Length: 633
Image (cartoon, rainbow, N blue to C red; front, side):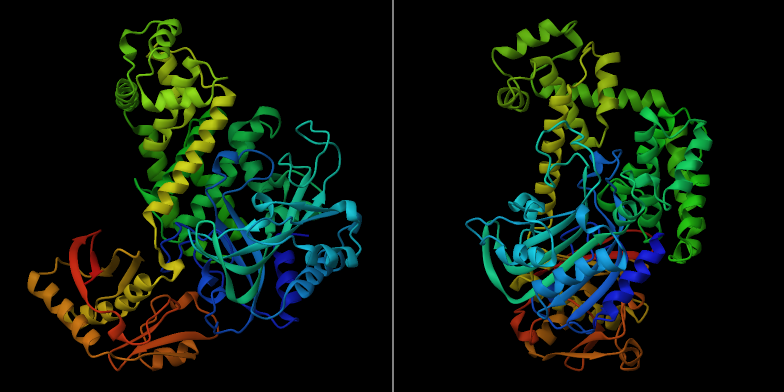
């Protein structure tokens, strides 16, 4: 079975059971600053999991493209991906565990014909926050899963946490196929909690009955929801009986093109770079198709990192000429039927790939290396190490042991006594370069070895610790950056989201009907609003826009929601900013007779609740595009 056949079978199965299909939306979250990308099919559904009514009803199903960077360091093994497709079905306060688990089992064993005896399942073992999920275990037992193939694990394995600091969450039950053999990591007792790859996770049923109101604090949701997810690529791998996801139909032509360009076979040490190239370039193409361009920050930085890692891994295979463009064409051909927008954007992302690749290849390598060396030296100096004067590891260790001059280096080494001081100091430098500049560990090690007389690569143990630290830093940074974001539906965010409607209309009134929203980012502290306009706003224009908004707030206009077709919404005069993303029915929010927009976010009941608004800043963010910041007054 190919991916297309699996998706059609899945969607049809749940449509027959009363589910309405959701559109496959962009990888870029709409009006949600809590994450850079859509990382799961449930991501756009947060408001409805919290209790809002969905235009399509209480039973939903979808095939959604997703991108996750949390496991990017693991890409290169047999089963991790950054970009993937996810099938999912949802119950928004409708059916519960009995139906969800029974339908999962029926689809896997009857529709797909997978052998029942190979399945293992896991359930939540319970803790101080929630009880043991005996109900799910009883259902699995009733369906015929043997007791020794039903496992109980903690929050790490069997709890779906919210996307941000707050939001819907709950225990889950997961389904695994035993691919056979012994533990790949040599453990005697291998079970689905092991990451060796023997147990292949194919489906996850999440029972969202809690709302995390703060880290570690939970309250019951207004409604109990079911949120399921099945990775398309992983399921195809299970169906085809291969434990290497890069050997399924979707990846084979990509791998073959890499083999052709490198004149090497997909075997041994060549597997990892080939897997990284195939995964990262596929992810890059879908990102560019959804409007992301390479840059130094946020989504653009992720894209640039993906492309440059493709180039680096290509070089490791001995491919010196530009070949990502030819490889991209293979990927486009592979997905053109299901994603016709790839064809329409073909020239755009081929140009971006070529520009990024050539800029890296044609850059002054000596300058780049010199700059990297200066950055490494600067950090080493900050933690108390003068690299230019050190000729050997013994001198470095002697200076660092008593006392620890650098807090970062000292803490790293003190907390990891099994790691040598030299490896520890090299590790802290690698860690800084990776988190600050996005420089791969291999490149920093080369600088340390070649130019700075530290002939010590970071040990595998140190690197594992550093990878964990890097993920923790990235996660904390994202939480800090998007604290109080839209997905938590806090009072301040709800007010500011409603303000975007007033702001949009006020800008059109003052500047002209050419003004169109081009994106927004809302936290509890401020509103950021991007819009199409060719020139800087004058102080008079900003004051006029602010005055109109506060006038409408003072008038305490009612905020009314209606559900209708997109065509009806357009006839009503509603602004439909993301029309191509909507399904059969849409929510239209009217603010008195002043503003009318298609929207799915949270809103106040009347404008008087907002209190007041102050515009604090306005600037250019590209040709013909402006960015405005506002706060609650």
